[in-house]
Image 1 (cartoon, helix red, strand yellow):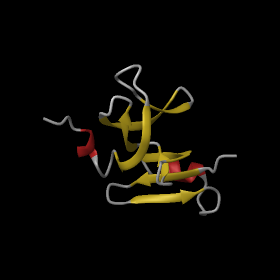
Image 2 (cartoon, helix red, strand yellow):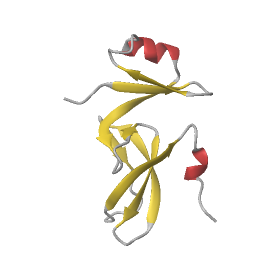
Image 3 (spheres, one colour):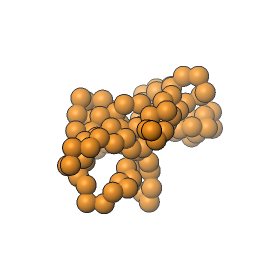
Length: 108
């Protein structure tokens, strides 16, 4: 069974919460914070937990490297591949959408 964990961004710091060990219920977390993200149950190649809202970097089968945002859509955690047919490997968490938005800016 997957661990139920959340984290929340409060405009200054990321707050992590194990459920139910941490004292707050899931409902209380949702009431207190606007930006709540759930643990996907997965870890990157270095063992770091992957949460909704994380920016993950990966290498595609053709050797190019890209960054993706982990999102919750239609009942699943997903990353959007804009180039169909390219396989993702070596996924690592490199930041998140709140603390590191610059990681998603197009490179010139």
